[in-house]
Each structure stands twice: as C-alpha cells, then as structure tokens.
Image: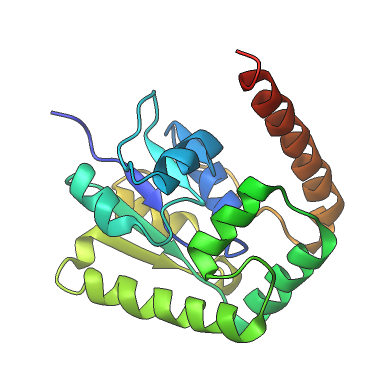
Length: 202
C-alpha cells in the first residue's frame, strides 16, 4: 500500500517555500512547484511518477483530483492576511517578467495573466471557501496554517504525527530574502529555458 502523500495547496506567496523547507527537514522528499508536473496538470493528468512524498506550491485548485488519485493524502493550506498577500504578489508580478509557460500557470490559478487586484482577491476568497467546504467532514486531512501568526513546528508536526525537531522553524522568502529569491528565480528560469530548448532538438 502506498504511503499517504502531502500536498501544499496554498497560493504562491503564502509561505509555500517555508512549507517545502519544513517538510524536507522532517524527512519528506518534497518538490516545490515542479514544472514537469505542472505540464501534466495543464494537460489534465493528475498522477505523477517519480520518487516524492510531498508537493508544495502545487495543486492550488486541483486538490479534488489529487485527493482522488492519492487516497489517504494530507493537505496543507498556507494562508496569510489577504491584504498583505495581495501586496506581496503584486510586487512579485511587478518585479519579474514571465515565460509563456508561467503565464499559463497563473491563468490556470487566477484566471488572468497580469495582476488584477479584484480578480486576485476574488480567487483568494474563493480558494479559502472551497477548500474549507471540501474538507468540511474530514478535518483530520486538512491543516490550515499562517506562518505570520507564529505557527510552525507545533501545528505541522501534530498534523503529520511527527516529533518536533530541535531546530528553528525555516521561515523563508521574507523581505530580507528578496534579493536572494530573485537570484533563485533567475537561476530556475534560465534552467527551464535551456531545458525546453534542448527538448525541441531531441
């Protein structure tokens, strides 16, 4: 019998990188926003090969299909104050240009390619309502966490039945890490660009 998988279904900029790092520190093979899985998802495939235990920054709106493909899985919804989230994701969209593939991902999540406050706000509220309603009778399968409120190891480890590690909780992508995050983003963008170009010549 396959062991339960873990899916982080919070929107980008809600602490999904923090969740990925925390899961990795707990011993899970966690993948953060795997583009090769995103491509399958956009093509209507919700079952993914490979050695992994958890996916973060992934499955924001396809959690019912993931739930169907991976029975017994656990879902973690990262949240934050909506106005702070809107400001954060607006700045992220303003800072960087995106590839056609990244645009497709944003359209699939938010319904638009460029930032629109009204649409993003609506998408955020809709996500909160629908996730809570979907798991209404299964509270043991859903954890809702807000890292900005000081939640961390206690809530996560209790949900996953793991002992709390004797290390600090790995908060990531805070304001002081903006420059580092930008460098990481450019690295991955160049990597995926080269990878896609190579595929075209195979």
